[in-house]
Image 1 (cartoon, rainbow, N blue to C red):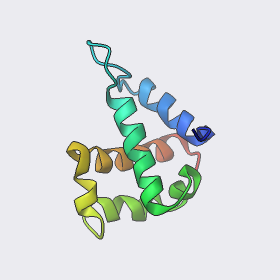
Image 2 (image 1 turned 120 degrees about the vertical axis):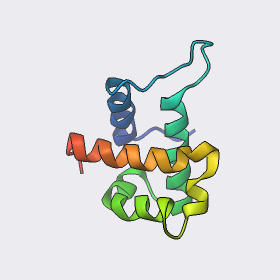
Image 3 (image 1 turned 60 degrees about the vertical axis):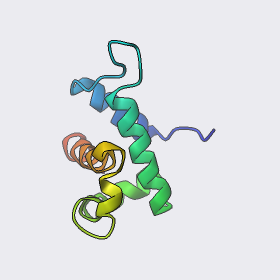
Image 4 (image 1 turned 30 degrees about the vertical axis):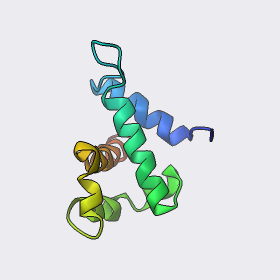
Length: 97
């Protein structure tokens, strides 16, 4: 398994601070796990690291919401699109990019 990037770890911490949940009441993976997996799927599709995705996040959000990959953006109950938007918000609020 690949070592998780520092930026991805920061994103997970940010989500937790924003009130996103790690697990459900049944102790199943919840929003943080879903968004992390969805974001990593975007990285895989784009053949980029999280850091490289951060450099072009505005274009990626557009691609997965209304442009080229909008069908992919609706996958996983729309968590692909939601994770891209959350990641963009994280970058804006934390000013890491």
